[in-house]
Image (cartoon, rainbow over all chains, first blue to last red):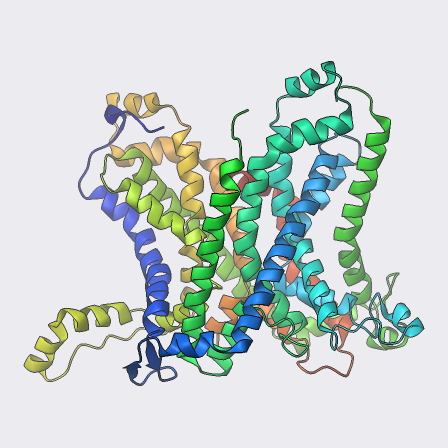
Length: 297
Length: 305
Protein backbone atom coordinates (compact mmCIF):
# COMPACT_ATOMS: atom_id res chain seq x y z
CA UNK A 1 0.00 0.00 0.00
CA UNK A 2 1.22 3.45 -0.67
CA UNK A 3 -0.43 6.81 -0.52
CA UNK A 4 -2.14 8.48 -3.44
CA UNK A 5 -0.07 11.23 -5.07
CA UNK A 6 -2.15 14.06 -3.63
CA UNK A 7 -1.36 12.77 -0.14
CA UNK A 8 2.36 13.20 -0.70
CA UNK A 9 4.59 16.20 -0.35
CA UNK A 10 6.77 17.38 -3.17
CA UNK A 11 9.99 19.10 -2.39
CA UNK A 12 13.35 18.89 -4.00
CA UNK A 13 15.85 19.37 -1.19
CA UNK A 14 14.00 18.71 2.04
CA UNK A 15 13.77 14.90 1.68
CA UNK A 16 17.45 14.66 0.81
CA UNK A 17 18.36 16.83 3.77
CA UNK A 18 16.27 14.78 6.20
CA UNK A 19 17.45 11.38 5.04
CA UNK A 20 21.09 12.45 4.75
CA UNK A 21 22.28 11.84 8.35
CA UNK A 22 21.04 8.25 8.40
CA UNK A 23 22.24 7.62 4.85
CA UNK A 24 25.68 9.00 5.66
CA UNK A 25 26.07 6.81 8.75
CA UNK A 26 24.95 3.72 6.86
CA UNK A 27 27.28 4.39 3.95
CA UNK A 28 30.30 5.04 6.18
CA UNK A 29 29.76 2.30 8.75
CA UNK A 30 27.96 -0.33 6.67
CA UNK A 31 28.65 -0.12 2.94
CA UNK A 32 32.24 1.11 3.08
CA UNK A 33 33.32 -1.66 5.53
CA UNK A 34 31.59 -4.30 3.42
CA UNK A 35 33.21 -2.98 0.26
CA UNK A 36 36.55 -2.85 2.05
CA UNK A 37 36.30 -6.45 3.25
CA UNK A 38 35.93 -7.65 -0.34
CA UNK A 39 38.53 -5.15 -1.61
CA UNK A 40 41.11 -6.22 0.97
CA UNK A 41 40.59 -9.86 0.24
CA UNK A 42 42.42 -9.22 -3.04
CA UNK A 43 45.28 -7.30 -1.42
CA UNK A 44 48.02 -8.12 1.02
CA UNK A 45 47.66 -5.49 3.75
CA UNK A 46 50.34 -4.47 6.17
CA UNK A 47 48.94 -4.32 9.69
CA UNK A 48 47.22 -0.99 10.36
CA UNK A 49 48.84 1.35 7.89
CA UNK A 50 51.63 0.88 5.40
CA UNK A 51 51.11 -0.11 1.81
CA UNK A 52 49.14 -2.86 0.16
CA UNK A 53 49.90 -5.25 -2.65
CA UNK A 54 47.47 -6.69 -5.17
CA UNK A 55 47.61 -10.47 -4.94
CA UNK A 56 44.52 -11.59 -6.86
CA UNK A 57 42.94 -14.72 -5.47
CA UNK A 58 45.98 -15.62 -3.34
CA UNK A 59 44.24 -14.68 -0.06
CA UNK A 60 41.28 -16.86 -0.89
CA UNK A 61 43.57 -19.70 -1.87
CA UNK A 62 45.39 -19.39 1.44
CA UNK A 63 42.22 -19.19 3.56
CA UNK A 64 40.31 -21.88 1.70
CA UNK A 65 43.19 -24.34 1.85
CA UNK A 66 43.52 -23.88 5.62
CA UNK A 67 41.82 -26.80 7.40
CA UNK A 68 41.29 -24.57 10.45
CA UNK A 69 39.01 -22.34 8.38
CA UNK A 70 36.82 -25.25 7.30
CA UNK A 71 36.74 -26.63 10.82
CA UNK A 72 35.67 -23.23 12.10
CA UNK A 73 33.03 -22.88 9.37
CA UNK A 74 31.67 -26.32 10.22
CA UNK A 75 31.49 -25.39 13.93
CA UNK A 76 29.72 -22.15 12.99
CA UNK A 77 27.18 -24.06 10.92
CA UNK A 78 26.50 -26.58 13.70
CA UNK A 79 26.11 -23.77 16.20
CA UNK A 80 23.75 -21.90 13.88
CA UNK A 81 21.56 -24.90 13.12
CA UNK A 82 21.39 -26.42 16.61
CA UNK A 83 21.45 -23.13 18.50
CA UNK A 84 18.83 -21.34 16.46
CA UNK A 85 16.51 -24.36 16.14
CA UNK A 86 16.46 -24.73 19.91
CA UNK A 87 16.20 -20.98 20.39
CA UNK A 88 12.99 -21.04 18.33
CA UNK A 89 11.56 -24.40 19.39
CA UNK A 90 11.76 -23.81 23.16
CA UNK A 91 10.11 -20.36 23.02
CA UNK A 92 7.48 -21.84 20.69
CA UNK A 93 6.56 -24.51 23.25
CA UNK A 94 6.52 -21.88 25.99
CA UNK A 95 4.40 -19.56 23.87
CA UNK A 96 1.83 -22.28 23.14
CA UNK A 97 1.66 -22.98 26.87
CA UNK A 98 1.39 -19.30 27.80
CA UNK A 99 -1.35 -18.82 25.19
CA UNK A 100 -3.63 -21.15 27.22
CA UNK A 101 -4.34 -18.19 29.52
CA UNK A 102 -3.86 -20.18 32.70
CA UNK A 103 -2.94 -18.41 35.91
CA UNK A 104 0.79 -18.99 35.39
CA UNK A 105 0.72 -17.27 31.99
CA UNK A 106 0.93 -13.81 33.51
CA UNK A 107 4.08 -14.22 35.62
CA UNK A 108 5.64 -16.29 32.83
CA UNK A 109 5.06 -13.58 30.24
CA UNK A 110 6.86 -11.14 32.52
CA UNK A 111 9.75 -13.34 33.61
CA UNK A 112 10.56 -14.74 30.17
CA UNK A 113 11.46 -11.26 28.91
CA UNK A 114 14.09 -10.59 31.58
CA UNK A 115 17.10 -12.10 29.77
CA UNK A 116 16.76 -9.23 27.28
CA UNK A 117 18.39 -7.06 29.94
CA UNK A 118 21.40 -9.32 30.41
CA UNK A 119 24.17 -8.77 27.90
CA UNK A 120 25.57 -11.77 26.02
CA UNK A 121 28.89 -11.28 27.75
CA UNK A 122 27.21 -11.18 31.18
CA UNK A 123 25.32 -14.38 30.35
CA UNK A 124 28.67 -15.90 29.44
CA UNK A 125 30.22 -14.84 32.73
CA UNK A 126 27.30 -16.26 34.72
CA UNK A 127 27.07 -19.54 32.79
CA UNK A 128 30.85 -19.98 32.97
CA UNK A 129 30.40 -19.98 36.73
CA UNK A 130 27.33 -22.23 36.85
CA UNK A 131 29.01 -24.79 34.61
CA UNK A 132 32.41 -24.47 36.26
CA UNK A 133 33.61 -28.08 36.74
CA UNK A 134 34.96 -27.44 40.25
CA UNK A 135 32.41 -25.21 41.97
CA UNK A 136 29.47 -25.21 39.56
CA UNK A 137 26.15 -27.01 39.43
CA UNK A 138 27.69 -30.20 38.02
CA UNK A 139 30.58 -30.32 40.50
CA UNK A 140 28.87 -32.94 42.75
CA UNK A 141 28.40 -35.20 39.71
CA UNK A 142 32.05 -34.70 38.89
CA UNK A 143 33.05 -35.90 42.33
CA UNK A 144 31.06 -39.09 41.84
CA UNK A 145 32.28 -39.69 38.29
CA UNK A 146 35.60 -37.87 37.87
CA UNK A 147 36.05 -36.29 34.47
CA UNK A 148 32.39 -36.53 33.52
CA UNK A 149 32.00 -32.83 32.94
CA UNK A 150 34.80 -30.45 32.09
CA UNK A 151 34.18 -27.83 29.41
CA UNK A 152 37.79 -26.72 29.85
CA UNK A 153 38.99 -30.03 28.41
CA UNK A 154 36.10 -31.62 26.57
CA UNK A 155 35.07 -29.78 23.40
CA UNK A 156 31.58 -31.33 23.40
CA UNK A 157 30.90 -30.10 26.94
CA UNK A 158 32.05 -26.62 25.97
CA UNK A 159 29.69 -26.64 22.98
CA UNK A 160 26.71 -27.72 25.11
CA UNK A 161 27.48 -24.89 27.52
CA UNK A 162 27.55 -22.35 24.66
CA UNK A 163 24.22 -23.54 23.28
CA UNK A 164 22.54 -23.49 26.72
CA UNK A 165 23.67 -19.89 27.20
CA UNK A 166 22.65 -18.91 23.67
CA UNK A 167 19.14 -20.31 24.04
CA UNK A 168 18.74 -18.60 27.42
CA UNK A 169 19.51 -15.23 25.88
CA UNK A 170 17.34 -15.85 22.82
CA UNK A 171 14.12 -16.65 24.64
CA UNK A 172 12.67 -13.13 25.14
CA UNK A 173 12.53 -11.94 21.54
CA UNK A 174 11.32 -15.20 20.05
CA UNK A 175 8.82 -15.79 22.85
CA UNK A 176 7.26 -12.35 22.46
CA UNK A 177 7.00 -12.65 18.67
CA UNK A 178 5.57 -16.18 18.73
CA UNK A 179 3.10 -15.38 21.50
CA UNK A 180 1.90 -12.31 19.59
CA UNK A 181 1.45 -14.54 16.54
CA UNK A 182 -0.55 -17.09 18.50
CA UNK A 183 -2.73 -14.44 20.08
CA UNK A 184 -3.62 -12.94 16.74
CA UNK A 185 -5.23 -16.22 15.63
CA UNK A 186 -8.97 -15.52 15.56
CA UNK A 187 -10.90 -17.18 18.36
CA UNK A 188 -13.53 -18.32 15.88
CA UNK A 189 -11.02 -20.71 14.32
CA UNK A 190 -10.57 -22.47 17.66
CA UNK A 191 -14.32 -22.66 18.05
CA UNK A 192 -14.81 -23.97 14.53
CA UNK A 193 -12.18 -26.61 15.18
CA UNK A 194 -13.88 -27.65 18.41
CA UNK A 195 -17.24 -27.85 16.62
CA UNK A 196 -15.69 -30.19 14.09
CA UNK A 197 -14.63 -32.42 16.94
CA UNK A 198 -10.95 -31.50 17.20
CA UNK A 199 -9.75 -31.75 20.80
CA UNK A 200 -7.42 -29.19 22.32
CA UNK A 201 -4.27 -31.25 21.59
CA UNK A 202 -5.35 -31.76 18.03
CA UNK A 203 -6.03 -28.06 17.57
CA UNK A 204 -2.48 -27.20 18.59
CA UNK A 205 -1.10 -29.15 15.67
CA UNK A 206 -3.82 -28.48 13.10
CA UNK A 207 -4.83 -24.90 13.89
CA UNK A 208 -2.25 -23.09 15.98
CA UNK A 209 1.04 -24.35 14.55
CA UNK A 210 0.15 -23.93 10.88
CA UNK A 211 -1.16 -20.44 11.54
CA UNK A 212 1.88 -19.31 13.52
CA UNK A 213 4.29 -20.49 10.82
CA UNK A 214 4.97 -16.98 9.45
CA UNK A 215 6.28 -15.97 12.89
CA UNK A 216 8.26 -19.19 13.23
CA UNK A 217 9.85 -18.55 9.86
CA UNK A 218 10.66 -14.96 10.75
CA UNK A 219 12.23 -15.80 14.11
CA UNK A 220 14.23 -18.56 12.46
CA UNK A 221 15.62 -16.23 9.80
CA UNK A 222 16.51 -13.54 12.34
CA UNK A 223 17.88 -16.12 14.76
CA UNK A 224 20.25 -17.44 12.11
CA UNK A 225 22.05 -14.12 11.67
CA UNK A 226 21.72 -13.44 15.39
CA UNK A 227 23.43 -16.70 16.30
CA UNK A 228 26.46 -15.83 14.16
CA UNK A 229 27.02 -12.69 16.18
CA UNK A 230 25.74 -13.54 19.66
CA UNK A 231 28.26 -16.35 19.55
CA UNK A 232 31.16 -13.94 19.90
CA UNK A 233 30.36 -12.61 23.37
CA UNK A 234 29.65 -16.13 24.64
CA UNK A 235 32.80 -17.69 23.18
CA UNK A 236 34.98 -14.82 24.36
CA UNK A 237 33.74 -14.99 27.95
CA UNK A 238 33.22 -18.74 28.34
CA UNK A 239 35.71 -20.74 26.28
CA UNK A 240 38.03 -18.37 24.34
CA UNK A 241 37.62 -20.69 21.38
CA UNK A 242 38.97 -23.66 23.33
CA UNK A 243 39.50 -26.36 24.26
CA UNK A 244 41.77 -26.99 21.31
CA UNK A 245 39.71 -24.87 18.91
CA UNK A 246 36.52 -26.85 19.59
CA UNK A 247 34.48 -23.66 20.00
CA UNK A 248 36.46 -21.40 17.69
CA UNK A 249 33.47 -20.14 15.70
CA UNK A 250 34.25 -18.08 12.61
CA UNK A 251 33.25 -14.71 14.10
CA UNK A 252 35.66 -15.38 16.98
CA UNK A 253 38.44 -16.66 14.72
CA UNK A 254 38.19 -13.53 12.57
CA UNK A 255 38.59 -11.37 15.67
CA UNK A 256 41.59 -13.35 16.88
CA UNK A 257 43.27 -13.41 13.46
CA UNK A 258 42.67 -9.71 12.87
CA UNK A 259 43.23 -8.10 16.26
CA UNK A 260 45.63 -10.52 17.92
CA UNK A 261 47.41 -12.00 14.91
CA UNK A 262 47.44 -8.79 12.82
CA UNK A 263 46.59 -10.88 9.75
CA UNK A 264 44.34 -8.22 8.25
CA UNK A 265 44.12 -9.72 4.77
CA UNK A 266 43.28 -13.13 6.18
CA UNK A 267 40.66 -11.66 8.50
CA UNK A 268 39.15 -9.56 5.70
CA UNK A 269 39.04 -12.57 3.40
CA UNK A 270 37.31 -14.66 6.07
CA UNK A 271 34.91 -11.77 6.71
CA UNK A 272 34.04 -11.71 3.02
CA UNK A 273 33.55 -15.49 3.06
CA UNK A 274 31.37 -15.27 6.17
CA UNK A 275 29.20 -12.57 4.61
CA UNK A 276 28.67 -14.63 1.47
CA UNK A 277 27.88 -17.62 3.70
CA UNK A 278 25.27 -15.70 5.71
CA UNK A 279 23.66 -14.25 2.59
CA UNK A 280 23.48 -17.67 0.93
CA UNK A 281 21.94 -19.24 4.05
CA UNK A 282 19.37 -16.47 4.39
CA UNK A 283 18.48 -16.69 0.70
CA UNK A 284 18.31 -20.46 1.06
CA UNK A 285 15.85 -20.16 3.90
CA UNK A 286 13.62 -17.93 1.82
CA UNK A 287 13.77 -20.28 -1.16
CA UNK A 288 13.21 -23.54 0.72
CA UNK A 289 11.11 -22.50 3.72
CA UNK A 290 9.65 -19.14 2.76
CA UNK A 291 7.71 -20.46 -0.21
CA UNK A 292 5.89 -23.03 1.88
CA UNK A 293 4.62 -20.50 4.35
CA UNK A 294 0.97 -19.64 3.94
CA UNK A 295 0.26 -16.09 5.01
CA UNK A 296 -3.51 -16.34 4.48
CA UNK A 297 -5.66 -16.33 7.57
CA UNK B 1 -10.66 -20.90 26.16
CA UNK B 2 -13.05 -22.94 24.13
CA UNK B 3 -13.61 -25.82 26.51
CA UNK B 4 -12.18 -26.94 29.79
CA UNK B 5 -9.08 -29.01 29.03
CA UNK B 6 -7.62 -29.93 32.35
CA UNK B 7 -4.87 -32.24 31.18
CA UNK B 8 -3.60 -29.66 28.73
CA UNK B 9 -3.67 -26.89 31.29
CA UNK B 10 -1.61 -28.98 33.70
CA UNK B 11 0.97 -29.73 31.00
CA UNK B 12 1.03 -26.06 30.00
CA UNK B 13 1.54 -25.07 33.63
CA UNK B 14 4.42 -27.53 34.02
CA UNK B 15 6.06 -26.25 30.83
CA UNK B 16 5.83 -22.67 32.03
CA UNK B 17 7.31 -23.62 35.40
CA UNK B 18 10.25 -25.36 33.71
CA UNK B 19 10.71 -22.33 31.47
CA UNK B 20 10.71 -19.93 34.38
CA UNK B 21 13.15 -22.07 36.35
CA UNK B 22 15.46 -22.09 33.32
CA UNK B 23 15.34 -18.28 33.22
CA UNK B 24 15.33 -17.60 36.95
CA UNK B 25 17.74 -20.34 38.06
CA UNK B 26 20.90 -18.67 36.73
CA UNK B 27 19.66 -15.30 37.98
CA UNK B 28 18.98 -16.72 41.43
CA UNK B 29 22.40 -18.39 41.61
CA UNK B 30 23.99 -15.13 40.52
CA UNK B 31 22.22 -13.35 43.34
CA UNK B 32 23.05 -15.89 46.04
CA UNK B 33 26.68 -16.22 44.95
CA UNK B 34 27.07 -12.47 45.03
CA UNK B 35 26.08 -12.51 48.70
CA UNK B 36 28.72 -15.05 49.73
CA UNK B 37 32.41 -14.72 50.42
CA UNK B 38 35.15 -16.05 48.16
CA UNK B 39 36.13 -18.61 50.81
CA UNK B 40 32.56 -19.94 50.90
CA UNK B 41 32.57 -20.64 47.16
CA UNK B 42 36.00 -22.28 47.38
CA UNK B 43 34.80 -24.57 50.18
CA UNK B 44 31.22 -25.32 49.26
CA UNK B 45 30.78 -24.58 45.57
CA UNK B 46 27.39 -23.23 44.55
CA UNK B 47 25.51 -21.13 47.06
CA UNK B 48 21.86 -22.19 47.18
CA UNK B 49 20.87 -19.67 49.82
CA UNK B 50 21.81 -16.01 50.26
CA UNK B 51 24.58 -14.94 52.62
CA UNK B 52 25.45 -11.54 54.04
CA UNK B 53 28.41 -10.45 51.94
CA UNK B 54 26.60 -8.67 49.12
CA UNK B 55 27.40 -5.21 50.41
CA UNK B 56 31.07 -6.14 50.70
CA UNK B 57 31.25 -7.59 47.20
CA UNK B 58 29.38 -4.66 45.67
CA UNK B 59 31.63 -2.21 47.48
CA UNK B 60 34.67 -3.93 46.01
CA UNK B 61 33.14 -3.57 42.54
CA UNK B 62 32.80 0.16 43.18
CA UNK B 63 36.23 0.68 44.74
CA UNK B 64 38.56 -1.89 43.16
CA UNK B 65 37.32 -1.97 39.57
CA UNK B 66 36.58 0.67 36.97
CA UNK B 67 33.00 -0.50 36.57
CA UNK B 68 31.47 2.74 37.98
CA UNK B 69 33.05 4.89 35.27
CA UNK B 70 32.36 2.16 32.72
CA UNK B 71 28.69 2.23 33.74
CA UNK B 72 28.73 5.90 32.89
CA UNK B 73 30.18 5.04 29.47
CA UNK B 74 27.50 2.40 28.96
CA UNK B 75 24.87 4.95 29.87
CA UNK B 76 26.24 7.50 27.41
CA UNK B 77 26.56 4.92 24.64
CA UNK B 78 23.12 3.41 25.21
CA UNK B 79 21.41 6.79 25.55
CA UNK B 80 23.24 8.27 22.56
CA UNK B 81 22.49 5.21 20.45
CA UNK B 82 18.81 5.23 21.41
CA UNK B 83 18.34 8.96 20.90
CA UNK B 84 20.19 9.11 17.57
CA UNK B 85 18.45 5.99 16.29
CA UNK B 86 15.02 7.37 17.21
CA UNK B 87 15.56 10.78 15.62
CA UNK B 88 17.35 9.68 12.47
CA UNK B 89 15.06 6.70 11.84
CA UNK B 90 12.00 8.91 12.33
CA UNK B 91 13.29 11.41 9.79
CA UNK B 92 14.31 8.88 7.17
CA UNK B 93 11.06 6.91 7.48
CA UNK B 94 9.13 10.17 7.17
CA UNK B 95 10.89 10.95 3.91
CA UNK B 96 10.35 7.43 2.54
CA UNK B 97 6.61 7.42 3.23
CA UNK B 98 5.38 10.99 2.80
CA UNK B 99 7.36 12.39 -0.11
CA UNK B 100 6.97 11.80 -3.78
CA UNK B 101 10.47 10.71 -4.64
CA UNK B 102 11.67 8.26 -7.24
CA UNK B 103 14.48 6.76 -5.16
CA UNK B 104 12.30 5.78 -2.19
CA UNK B 105 12.27 2.06 -3.00
CA UNK B 106 16.00 1.96 -3.57
CA UNK B 107 16.76 3.90 -0.37
CA UNK B 108 14.51 1.66 1.68
CA UNK B 109 16.16 -1.51 0.35
CA UNK B 110 19.61 -0.04 1.00
CA UNK B 111 18.67 0.79 4.61
CA UNK B 112 16.96 -2.54 5.21
CA UNK B 113 20.00 -4.49 3.99
CA UNK B 114 21.83 -3.44 7.16
CA UNK B 115 19.75 -5.93 9.14
CA UNK B 116 21.23 -8.88 7.28
CA UNK B 117 24.92 -8.31 8.06
CA UNK B 118 25.31 -7.23 11.70
CA UNK B 119 28.20 -5.14 12.99
CA UNK B 120 29.92 -8.14 14.60
CA UNK B 121 30.45 -9.77 11.21
CA UNK B 122 32.08 -6.74 9.62
CA UNK B 123 33.98 -5.64 12.72
CA UNK B 124 37.48 -5.81 11.20
CA UNK B 125 36.86 -3.35 8.40
CA UNK B 126 34.48 -1.18 10.44
CA UNK B 127 37.32 -0.75 12.91
CA UNK B 128 39.56 0.27 10.06
CA UNK B 129 37.01 2.83 8.80
CA UNK B 130 36.52 4.18 12.32
CA UNK B 131 40.27 4.66 12.67
CA UNK B 132 39.93 7.20 9.87
CA UNK B 133 36.37 8.15 9.05
CA UNK B 134 37.54 10.35 6.20
CA UNK B 135 39.42 7.54 4.44
CA UNK B 136 36.59 7.04 1.90
CA UNK B 137 37.09 10.67 0.82
CA UNK B 138 40.83 10.08 0.44
CA UNK B 139 40.11 7.00 -1.63
CA UNK B 140 37.64 8.97 -3.75
CA UNK B 141 40.29 11.64 -4.40
CA UNK B 142 42.78 8.94 -5.37
CA UNK B 143 40.47 7.08 -7.70
CA UNK B 144 39.21 10.16 -9.51
CA UNK B 145 42.77 11.34 -10.12
CA UNK B 146 42.00 14.55 -8.25
CA UNK B 147 44.79 13.78 -5.82
CA UNK B 148 47.30 13.55 -8.63
CA UNK B 149 46.37 17.06 -9.73
CA UNK B 150 46.53 18.36 -6.19
CA UNK B 151 49.88 16.69 -5.62
CA UNK B 152 51.20 18.37 -8.76
CA UNK B 153 49.90 21.77 -7.79
CA UNK B 154 50.60 21.81 -4.06
CA UNK B 155 53.35 19.23 -3.69
CA UNK B 156 51.37 16.70 -1.62
CA UNK B 157 48.11 14.78 -2.09
CA UNK B 158 45.16 15.36 0.22
CA UNK B 159 45.23 13.03 3.24
CA UNK B 160 42.42 13.71 5.65
CA UNK B 161 42.56 12.10 9.08
CA UNK B 162 39.81 11.77 11.67
CA UNK B 163 39.80 8.82 14.02
CA UNK B 164 36.72 8.22 16.16
CA UNK B 165 38.25 5.24 17.97
CA UNK B 166 38.29 5.51 21.74
CA UNK B 167 35.65 8.26 21.72
CA UNK B 168 32.00 8.07 22.70
CA UNK B 169 31.06 9.19 19.21
CA UNK B 170 32.97 6.25 17.75
CA UNK B 171 31.29 3.84 20.14
CA UNK B 172 27.84 5.13 19.18
CA UNK B 173 27.92 5.93 15.45
CA UNK B 174 28.32 2.39 14.01
CA UNK B 175 25.50 1.18 16.25
CA UNK B 176 23.15 3.79 14.80
CA UNK B 177 23.88 2.65 11.24
CA UNK B 178 21.10 0.09 11.41
CA UNK B 179 17.76 -0.18 9.63
CA UNK B 180 15.41 -1.56 12.28
CA UNK B 181 14.24 1.86 13.47
CA UNK B 182 13.52 3.13 9.98
CA UNK B 183 11.62 -0.06 9.25
CA UNK B 184 9.58 0.26 12.46
CA UNK B 185 8.55 3.86 11.79
CA UNK B 186 7.83 3.19 8.13
CA UNK B 187 5.47 0.34 9.00
CA UNK B 188 3.69 2.60 11.48
CA UNK B 189 3.39 5.56 9.10
CA UNK B 190 1.84 3.36 6.45
CA UNK B 191 -1.01 2.46 8.77
CA UNK B 192 -1.97 6.13 9.08
CA UNK B 193 -4.91 7.25 6.92
CA UNK B 194 -3.97 9.17 3.79
CA UNK B 195 -6.65 11.72 4.63
CA UNK B 196 -4.46 12.88 7.49
CA UNK B 197 -1.97 14.40 5.06
CA UNK B 198 -4.70 15.77 2.83
CA UNK B 199 -6.42 17.45 5.74
CA UNK B 200 -3.16 18.88 6.99
CA UNK B 201 -2.36 20.28 3.56
CA UNK B 202 -5.84 21.75 3.20
CA UNK B 203 -5.29 23.54 6.48
CA UNK B 204 -2.13 24.97 5.01
CA UNK B 205 0.44 22.86 6.85
CA UNK B 206 3.72 22.38 5.03
CA UNK B 207 5.91 19.30 5.17
CA UNK B 208 7.80 20.38 8.29
CA UNK B 209 4.71 21.59 10.14
CA UNK B 210 3.04 18.24 9.43
CA UNK B 211 6.14 16.47 10.74
CA UNK B 212 6.34 18.43 13.99
CA UNK B 213 2.69 19.07 14.84
CA UNK B 214 0.96 15.92 13.60
CA UNK B 215 3.37 13.05 13.04
CA UNK B 216 5.52 13.58 16.13
CA UNK B 217 2.66 13.48 18.67
CA UNK B 218 1.14 10.44 16.95
CA UNK B 219 4.44 8.54 17.14
CA UNK B 220 5.00 9.00 20.84
CA UNK B 221 4.54 5.38 21.89
CA UNK B 222 6.58 4.16 18.90
CA UNK B 223 9.36 6.45 20.01
CA UNK B 224 9.19 4.96 23.50
CA UNK B 225 9.24 1.40 22.15
CA UNK B 226 12.19 2.01 19.84
CA UNK B 227 14.03 3.94 22.54
CA UNK B 228 13.76 1.12 25.09
CA UNK B 229 14.74 -1.49 22.50
CA UNK B 230 17.77 0.45 21.26
CA UNK B 231 18.86 1.46 24.75
CA UNK B 232 18.97 -2.19 25.81
CA UNK B 233 20.80 -3.06 22.59
CA UNK B 234 23.38 -0.33 23.18
CA UNK B 235 23.91 -1.28 26.81
CA UNK B 236 24.46 -4.95 26.03
CA UNK B 237 26.84 -4.47 23.06
CA UNK B 238 30.10 -6.34 23.49
CA UNK B 239 32.34 -6.79 20.47
CA UNK B 240 32.24 -3.23 19.15
CA UNK B 241 32.99 -1.49 22.46
CA UNK B 242 35.66 -4.13 23.08
CA UNK B 243 37.63 -3.23 19.94
CA UNK B 244 36.72 0.45 19.61
CA UNK B 245 37.89 1.44 23.08
CA UNK B 246 41.56 1.09 23.85
CA UNK B 247 41.68 2.40 27.44
CA UNK B 248 39.79 0.92 30.42
CA UNK B 249 38.24 4.30 31.17
CA UNK B 250 36.59 4.30 27.75
CA UNK B 251 35.27 0.73 27.90
CA UNK B 252 31.64 -0.03 28.60
CA UNK B 253 30.52 -1.87 31.73
CA UNK B 254 29.83 -5.17 29.95
CA UNK B 255 33.37 -5.22 28.58
CA UNK B 256 34.74 -4.32 31.99
CA UNK B 257 32.76 -7.13 33.57
CA UNK B 258 34.11 -9.69 31.12
CA UNK B 259 37.66 -8.44 31.86
CA UNK B 260 37.17 -9.43 35.51
CA UNK B 261 37.35 -13.09 34.50
CA UNK B 262 40.99 -14.19 34.59
CA UNK B 263 42.25 -15.41 31.22
CA UNK B 264 43.93 -18.63 32.31
CA UNK B 265 42.24 -21.69 33.74
CA UNK B 266 43.38 -23.17 37.02
CA UNK B 267 42.63 -21.02 40.04
CA UNK B 268 38.95 -20.51 40.80
CA UNK B 269 38.14 -16.85 40.00
CA UNK B 270 36.62 -14.61 42.65
CA UNK B 271 33.09 -15.51 41.60
CA UNK B 272 31.20 -13.66 44.36
CA UNK B 273 32.73 -10.36 43.31
CA UNK B 274 32.21 -11.10 39.60
CA UNK B 275 28.58 -12.06 40.21
CA UNK B 276 28.08 -8.86 42.21
CA UNK B 277 29.52 -7.07 39.19
CA UNK B 278 27.10 -8.87 36.88
CA UNK B 279 24.21 -7.70 39.05
CA UNK B 280 25.46 -4.12 39.16
CA UNK B 281 26.01 -4.06 35.39
CA UNK B 282 22.61 -5.60 34.60
CA UNK B 283 20.70 -3.53 37.16
CA UNK B 284 20.08 -0.59 34.84
CA UNK B 285 18.58 -2.58 31.93
CA UNK B 286 16.69 -4.86 34.34
CA UNK B 287 15.14 -1.85 36.03
CA UNK B 288 14.26 -0.49 32.63
CA UNK B 289 12.54 -3.73 31.63
CA UNK B 290 10.65 -3.87 34.91
CA UNK B 291 9.37 -0.32 34.51
CA UNK B 292 8.90 -0.13 30.76
CA UNK B 293 8.00 -3.70 29.87
CA UNK B 294 4.91 -2.54 27.99
CA UNK B 295 7.04 -0.55 25.56
CA UNK B 296 9.69 -3.24 25.20
CA UNK B 297 7.15 -5.89 24.21
CA UNK B 298 5.52 -3.41 21.87
CA UNK B 299 8.89 -2.65 20.32
CA UNK B 300 9.75 -6.31 19.84
CA UNK B 301 6.42 -7.01 18.19
CA UNK B 302 6.64 -3.93 15.98
CA UNK B 303 10.13 -4.73 14.78
CA UNK B 304 8.75 -7.96 13.41
CA UNK B 305 5.90 -6.62 11.27
